[in-house]
Image 1 (cartoon, helix red, strand yellow):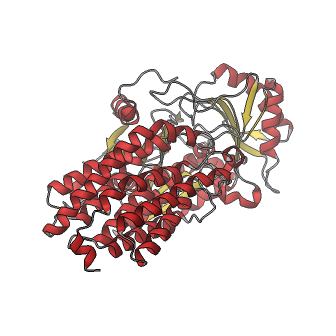
Image 2: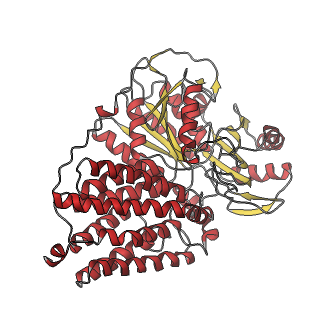
Image 3: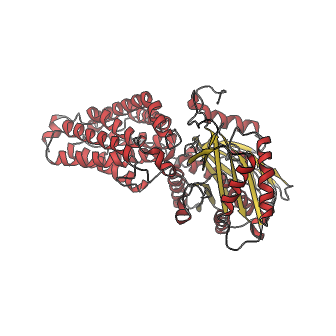
Length: 580
């Protein structure tokens, strides 16, 4: 259990601040995460790792010469936002381009991808390398769908060393993808982790059992089995990773036996006593193996085995020196120079300049009231949504929605106070939601609100047809980014029925209030029906069977919010409705 905290919502931010202070000789905190205290004497590719908090020493703990140039740090188990990734990249860039590298999770892919687009548009070359080492999360036929777990460490290490050796962006990307293609991990959980402020873990296992195929976001294993002896466990882990050995290899392995947070080092050494001989008996030479905690999951009890098949190039980078707060190897053969000051935010984020009509500013007050209602509703529903998400996910949906809606309300309120119209109020709220909530749902809600606001604009009070158009824009932005469809067991399962029902009712000239209420009822029914579906997208997909019988939390929260905000958004003046 996590016992040392103040406000649980501030845990990740306070942990990052404390880390940066304790290791101020090597790192400095910037907006969105941390970067090296010192930068290279000459331009080099900036390798930027990232993801949610709760995995220390990944990701910030491996910032330093020979490893990462920066880390983007999201909330616990939650993808950092596009803005966070962009800000860290700006701070870490030394003139040779940046490469984001991270585990294959939908929220990370969306946010780092959009940050890369923004950087490239500004002339800063940016690439992405995804890690897909978890053999339990998808078959070899769908290897591109696999999660990134402890194999992150190996891939990040070789990329950092390649960049430190002066390789250009294309070469660093090539090396990273090569390492990923030769890295495999299997893990098992003995018990769940506990969020700060929570009084129970995300999951429990029957006495004397373990869950094989764990994730690093607090997910249970893909299936439960009786807890074996150390010898039998080691044998099973080795068997599973070696089943995916490449047809041709040089017989040399980088190996990581990784603890997930509360598995004692002594236990890992007992397990290593079985793992190492089995790998050697299979004909492998073990190159600088690591036994310890490298990619954790808060206080999760569990262990994972990672192997990377090495050739001469990868071995050179795997064994190269590194100097970071949590990981040190060898002696550096190069010098660093003091870092320059980080550009102020204003250097690349323009100040808002709002201009709106009195009519739009009046409607903006209703939008603000809708966001206030949303934030209050999600605060009251946080535990329920988190429990739903914990069945087959990481349990963070409730917390993410609370953080996102609260940030949206604050930003929208500031925009309204500065004279913004309805569109700008919703755009400000959407951008803040995406920035502070993190994760897939955070970026999708933020993008959806922005699309809604863009369609409304700041000139006129919206008519029912305008509202229907804005709803379609909201839905179109989310489906376009998330690529989910009806039946995938996501928020789309309630969003699309809502958009269709509201559009049809408005086209039939039903009053906006009635049309919205009826559409919200359809969305609520569609959300409840997701209980019978198997998830085909998102973090719940690897645990699809466990999800059956529980409605999708994203579909549920969307239906709840849309039902609650209707009275605010449809309170259109009679004159506006009559003109239609």
